[in-house]
Length: 62
Image (cartoon, rainbow, N blue to C red; front, top):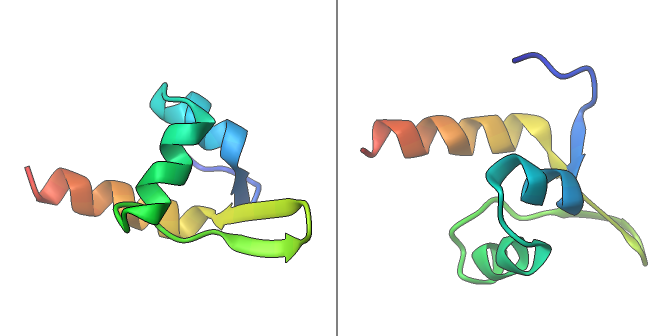
């Protein structure tokens, strides 16, 4: 799947993985998920390439 956007929002990731936004936060705190980029005080984004690489590594670890 090719996405024209370069970043994901937390809500988009939660929808993508069918989890809550709190679960995304917990994964980041547990270092089980790529770290976000803080763009401003209320703007947190994840680089799409890092997310796709993370997904690929999860497939390879099975």
